[in-house]
Amino acid sequence: LSGGLGPSGIARDPQGNLYVTRYDFAPAEEGVTKPGTISKISPEGKLLEEIATPAPELTGICISPEQDALFVTEASTNVVYRIPL
Image (cartoon, rainbow, N blue to C red; front, side):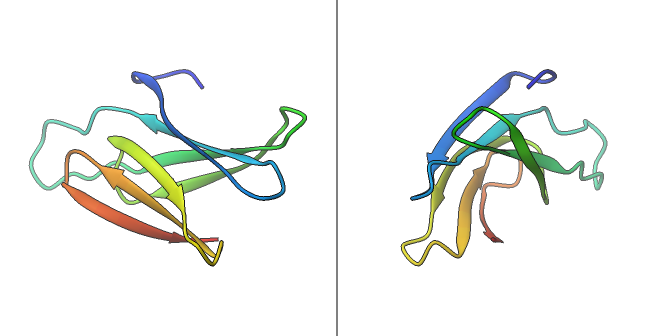
């Protein structure tokens, strides 16, 4: 998980997979939005998936009670995003 400031949040699903957010700096230019990344990692430590988010400064993550979505907080936009699983 290289780049930016590294891992910033973690959540675990019932299957033992980890969802790890990364905090990367948003571009300085107005109106430019860089995507962020959530890494899904198996209990064995294998990278299963990279999930794109609308913005890069990810600060926290949790799984919805129904386990059908991730809720991710983001600093540059001050928004909580719902990412469907």
